[in-house]
Length: 78
Image (cartoon, rainbow, N blue to C red; front, side, top):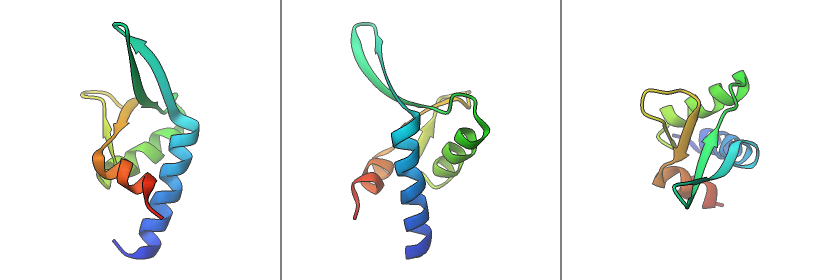
């Protein structure tokens, strides 16, 4: 991926992190996840990031996902 593509994906990742991140309690533990809230823009953003290896979508689903190690690295990059 070239530098421009990386910048675009990083900007998209920051938007997903800001607007689609959720924290829930599951069996007494805090779980962090991404929820596209069934909005087309959220679905497409998370699908693009998943195709690039930055998000792992829920098994058999399309609504929920989580950051991969590469996705967390992308969010932390300059």
